[in-house]
Length: 102
Image (cartoon, rainbow, N blue to C red; front, side, top):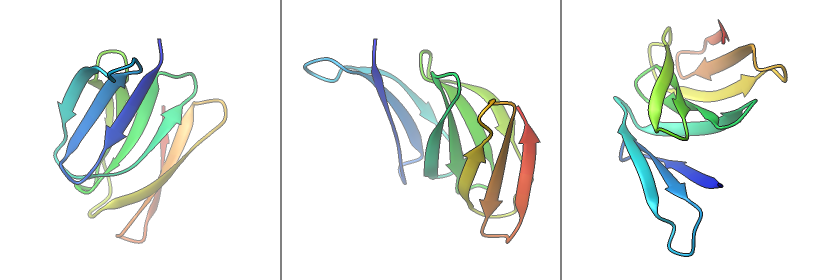
């Protein structure tokens, strides 16, 4: 089963099952707008950078949060995930780069 995951200024991460009608599978309300998303190896986990200074990982099957990363004081603008999936780094408007163990 294939899914499409969206996020935006409405503060929701939405998961849709790829079908003829793109049926929505789930929705998760975040405490900040979703600025950036990237897939974690192995899928179906997605890292979401939020406008609240947090980053969260979301399970695409259940649309539930897996882990929350804190430390930024402003928008989290971008992220990078190590190829082995064991660490990620984020950068934010607060001019800091943070590294997290996954």
